[in-house]
Structure formats: C-alpha cells, structure tokens
Amino acid sequence: MRKRIINPLRKETAVSGQDWLNIESLAEVEITSEHTEHPIEDALLPDRAGGWRASEPGIQIIRLIFDPPQRLDLIRLDFVETEVQRTQQYVLSWSADGESFTEIVRQQWNFSPLGARGETEEYYVNLPAVAVLELCIIPDIGGAHAVASLEQLRLA
Image 1 (cartoon, rainbow, N blue to C red):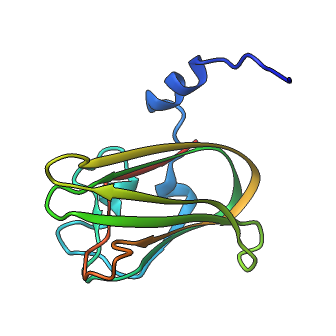
Image 2 (image 1 turned 90 degrees about the vertical axis):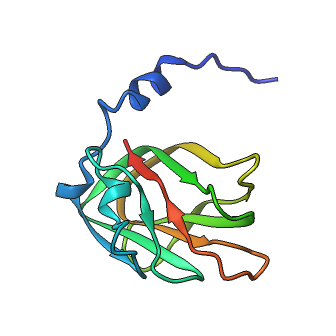
C-alpha cells in the first residue's frame, strides 16, 4: 500500500479567501443567460452576495476565458437551492487552447428544500495553464424546467 500524509492547512488557507484569484482582472466571462437581479458577478466576485441565476430554464454554461492562461490548484463551487426539489448535474472542464476540453468532474446532487439545500465542492487540481474553464449545469436531469444557479465560484 502506498500512503502519503497531506497537510490539512492547505484547505484552511484557501478557504480563508487570501489565495483566491481575482477573476475580475484575469478573465472574460461568457454565460448563456443571467437573471437581471442575480448577475454572474454575484457568484464570481468576493464582495458580492446572492449568487448567479439563469434567466431561463434548461442547460446553462459559464465559461471563464483567461488571458494569459492561469495556473489552477483549487476550484470551489457552492450551489444553493431553497425552493425546488431537483437533481442537478454539472460538468466542470478545462482547456489549454480554448478548443479541446478535458473533463475535471461530472457530479450530480439532489436538492430538497426540506433537507439538502446546498452543496459545496472543492477540487484540488494541478492545471498549469488554463485558458478556459467551463461549467455546464443541467439544473434538473429529470427534464423539469428548473432554473440553474450558482452561489459561488472561487479559484486558487
């Protein structure tokens, strides 16, 4: 068996917010839609609250285009759903050239207003030169006309 001791302080340092990338100055954002009262800035910028929400039901894409490409070690996603019971799926992918994408993770989560109202995921990655980071959200894999949302996206 191979075993390694890892440093638990790494997570605490990143979560404190000191090491998050300044997405506003490093990336252009492409989105398929946004609700006027919940723009994408509310999910990406640390001084904003309320999160992003799509303006219409169905599959949504959030794409961060970095210029120059950025090194990513940690990706944190926070989702909150307080109104509708649904099973959400998201796919997080990255590209070094903006054309060919590699999947980082494909995840499903069951939201229930009376139970599981939020999901926070942290992915430790070793991506030396990310030109594009793409988050594709299917708000309800059951086919209901649910609206996608993202409370927070942070990168380090």
